[in-house]
Structure formats: C-alpha cells, structure tokens
Image (cartoon, rainbow, N blue to C red):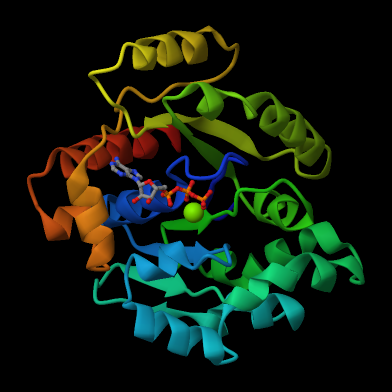
Length: 262
Ligand SMILES: Nc1ncnc2c1ncn2[C@@H]1O[C@H](COP(=O)(O)OP(=O)(O)OP(=O)(O)O)[C@@H](O)[C@H]1O
Ligand SMILES: [Mg+2]
C-alpha cells in the first residue's frame, strides 16, 4: 500500500468551508514537513485562487494543463502539476470547463474510476505524503470519482441549521461509494465558521457528537476576518497573519488529521 494518503474535502452543502479548510490544512501540513499535492476539483477555482492570483488562475485555466483536460484525456496527473510559492505544496489547477465534467465522464468506460486511474502513478511514486482534493458542492459522478480515488473524506460542516441539513444525503452517498471502494474511510467532521456568540453552535456540536461512527475533530474553526483577507491576497491565513486564531486552529486540525490518518 502506498504511503501517500489521499483525502477528499467534501460536503454537498455549499459554502461549508471545504476550499478554505483544504488550502489551510495543506499549508499547516507543509510546515509540519509534509509534502502536499492539492487537486482543485471544483470549477469555482477557489483552491487554485488560494495560492495564485486571479490573473494567474485564469491563465492556467485557459491552457490545456488543468484537471479538466487530464480527466478528458484520462492522462497521468504527474504531467499537470504546477508549483506554488511554497516548497512543499504543489497544485493541479482546475478550469471553468469542469462545469462539463459530468458529460465527459458519461461516455467513458468504468467512469467512476477515471480519477483513481489518473492518480495511480503519482500515488505509487510516493513523492507526496498527502494528496488533498477539494470537491464541488454536489453529489454526482464527478464527486463519486473523487471519493473512489480517496482513502479518506473529511467533511467541513458549518455550524448552522442548514449546515447540518443534507449530511444525511452525504452519508447515504458514502454508502454507495463504499460499494465501489471499500477503502474509503470517514476521517471526521470539522466544524467551521463558528460564531461563538451564538448558542446554536453548541447545539450543532451536540447533534454531531450523537452521530454513530462519526468522529468530530476537537479543533473548531471560528469565524475570522483574517480568512477573507488572506483569500483576497491568495495566501494561506498563516502566511497572511501568522498568529491569527484561524491559523492556530488550522494547525491544530492538521495535527489531528495526521493522527487520524495513521
Ligand atoms: N473561518 C472562517 N471565517 C470567516 N469566513 C470564512 C471562514 N471559513 C470560510 N469562510 C468564508 O466562507 C465562504 C465559504 O467558504 P469556502 O469557499 O471555503 O466553502 P466551500 O464549502 O468550499 O464552498 P463551495 O461549496 O461553494 O465550494 C468563503 O467566502 C470564505 O471566505
Ligand atoms: Mg469550495
């Protein structure tokens, strides 16, 4: 078995903090000495924008070296890697063409396994400790591909009533995925965008803790304006504001992830 661990950041609820968590966990892991490859699986390009400016991302999206073409051509993903300004973080950028990915998959043989096959060589080479994949807020053939290619799913959940609504659909979907990929494990639920002034947050935590076989990470990510400023500057929050509370919380979460993946 490869030592490279593949983790999907997934939740069909939009805006739950998937891209933010994926980018900032990647940075924390990199400072802990781990080599990380990020895969931007969403046409919104948010993970790519976490490390590159808008102009750079749009330029990359125009070229044929992005995830859409890799999947369309069923190519080895090693040829689609771009380097970020951080030594231990590389990226496979997305493209707005990813909006048509379901159509591309539809006509292909064993269509649930395409991303897994495209990742095979990279995983076997063990050049990365972690491959983190950011998913779009959907449950369909493409997210099925992401999950089949992953060893773990981490579910960022927003501490709000609608943040919890829909988790049942996700868990049902995971059962379907497990019929194709018995390796997939639920790493845990990370509570994000916590507003500690609101009591509702405590109820969210209690509700999640009552779920059977679901690990809830101890580190909760609170609302922090430094996150938005860091994204506006295409930087991880710990680079933008080193001692901001979300930088510290994301470091704690990364350490929990390291423990959970052993
Ligand atoms: N801890 C935080 N504090 C403040 N704002 C946050 C925090 N986490 C995320 N956000 C903001 O919330 C919004 C949604 O976050 P993000 O894009 O990471 O969610 P997502 O699940 O990836 O969304 P989508 O489903 O659209 O892909 C973004 O505008 C982001 O800036
Ligand atoms: Mg996102």
